[in-house]
Length: 154
Image 1 (cartoon, rainbow, N blue to C red):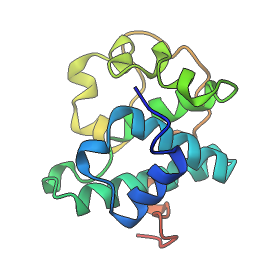
Image 2 (image 1 turned 180 degrees about the vertical axis):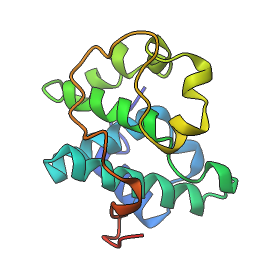
Image 3 (image 1 turned 135 degrees about the vertical axis):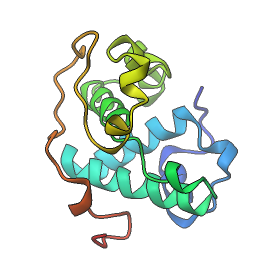
Image 4 (image 1 turned 90 degrees about the vertical axis):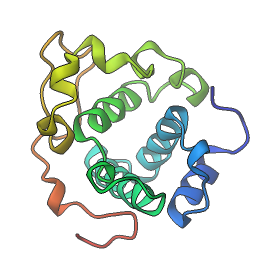
């Protein structure tokens, strides 16, 4: 569960500057950072681009293997969609909502499909059940043209 310390905006700053310990980059921290980015950007597609860049930069700095540095596109879009749909709730309710549970995507995607390279690299529609919310993030946004957390285009 996400506690009041650190605050979500402090999590974002620590991710951006590389000072967040890997052990603190939890599922709940991802959700909190997604919410802060969404609130800052105001636009789901901009927030997605920021989140992609942030996750990728953080993963690269924290020493993940090369094949795991880039964020998992389908999972990232799913959780950002859930955070957007639950935007009216306080963050502490969002992080415990069933749509935001760690295993929530497996209600909609088979393990094989979600673990596929295609799902890791791009949005792959669910194969088990429809999403419980309208997905507001443009599924055709090209990962190669989004900006990272520094504003630079890859």
